[in-house]
Length: 125
Image (cartoon, rainbow, N blue to C red; front, side, top):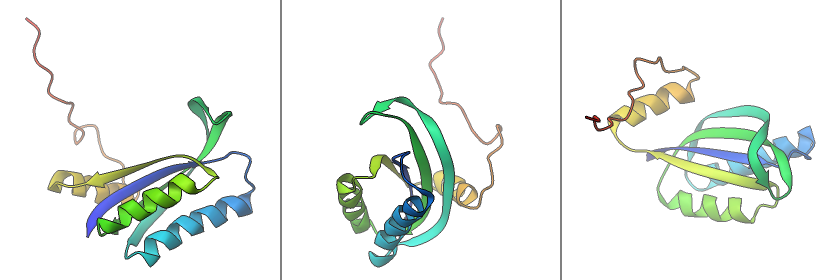
């Protein structure tokens, strides 16, 4: 079982019941294909960086889950054909450092700035 995170953006025109139904739909896909959901984080409606399918805003959700790698292809397929999903991103956490970060994020613990190391950039002389 690998550690994953899926962020998806739903249309802002959906009602609260429709939003909950779509989140339950995604959770059902994960559960029925062998995944275990660690947490679901509703991030609310936010302004998009640019228009997507004529929408300037979107309702964001993040789901942290563990799953076999075969689930990811099915999840991508379903999210692509779901009309209410305007964008999605699936992130895989592989090494020990990333898995520790996943554990903290999935339990709602924010990382301190000391834990986040900047990418080593070459020195300019």
